[in-house]
Length: 583
Ligand SMILES: Nc1ncnc2c1ncn2[C@@H]1O[C@H](COP(=O)(O)OP(=O)(O)OP(=O)(O)O)[C@@H](O)[C@H]1O
Ligand SMILES: [Mg+2]
Image 1: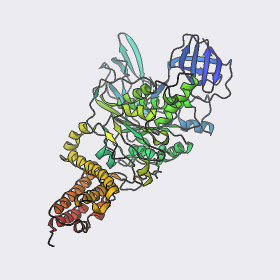
Image 2: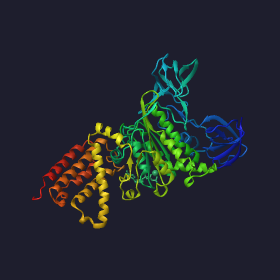
Image 3: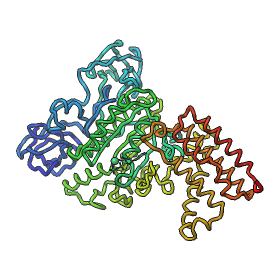
């Protein structure tokens, strides 16, 4: 039965006359059939948040229940796409209308005409389980799209098509279960607010390597882990997210941009398609899905965007890939939630956010994980969320609720950013709760003494902070020589190791092997200098050996050349070992 609009308040519309309305169902609103979702049921009436611009909508217009929850289309063609928060392809909408987005345009998320080259992987007569691979499509130069038995289906393959070209709506297989047959196509659908099932979550004991020294060495995130990047205005959140999108060793990247400023998203839309995947030289978009929200898009679509993002990520996880989701910034998502909650006249909680903010944040990050997927293989979805607390004060609700559930905290710091120390991750208050679980991996795959070197370096940096307080009181000259040495080493760690210039061709990425070599040599210099001090060599004499400029150049030294440069530094270290008091 068709309903009727009886109230409109911004993006929230009240509809009466729907037959048995259900929470989260999609309803098409008005003559333009705007997409909306039932968010509340009040007696006979359904309260609907509309994902499109509602201006021009009138009371009395019709409303039709789709009887389906808000879902995304899943199938080949996702990679390389740019969608809005409810998976409408932005590029297509642009083509069609010439402007950004107008209401009520019906465009499919995935191309219905395009033919994909499908290769079957099973024979007719095979008994298949949910999530099992029945074939594949080469989706991009970098991604093989595994065609799976849908999560809730199983049975015997009664029929499967031959290798060839098919659209996403054509039947590629017929499944029979309990006498019932079911057609399988390349496209499926999944409700965005429901997590896709896995067999079991696995412990997070492999790092997601990012090529960013302060992250991989000091505060690593596990593959399938969660990380929060809170930071004040201009502190480098977006640059970090971009660096991870470019350099992390995930197979697939889902980038959800909720920019407050229109130009921030435009920038992404302009720059991402130009970028190359550094490892393969192929376009970065060949392994990336972009979800873009700008301030001129309706808030409800922004609220939905992170669910759309994680659902697409889970879909590729279920093919056995490691997927990383970047959400920048989740504060904009939370503000959308707050605005919608206000329109629904719900009881506001802290700072006007709904009381269920914490639960929603938790449910989102809960969908991350490294997991044994239905097929028995392993896949992972890592979530990295930026948070932009007003004034940079993380005592506010979005930061607090995020830090409660995420296991890595990269604390961006305004004073570091002002001093042009980038990434401005504060080494004194950031943390990773994955460190212990990852140590074994680093020991086995990089170096036995990796954890010790890291701990020693962090301890030096902590000591520096303590010494600096003393300097404030007594001045540098009054410091014991051992403390002066620590200040020297800590400066190297900060300037030549933790700092990393995203815009320098070489410095932008450092393999973990390079990271290890750099960290090791700095600590070798430290040890040699310390031993010299212990032999009563005056610090001026130690400082006179010009090892520091060489260390400073390592950042900008390519992976091929680094060993040669290390040899030069090793010669200096030998010299430090030889200096004597008498000389
Ligand atoms: N790793 C880096 N290397 C060099 N420069 C950097 C780095 N990180 C950040 N910057 C500098 O800081 C500027 C601001 O960074 P960014 O836009 O990422 O901040 P933000 O926290 O996202 O800001 P906003 O709150 O406005 O979204 C960049 O334009 C760049 O000049
Ligand atoms: Mg930003």
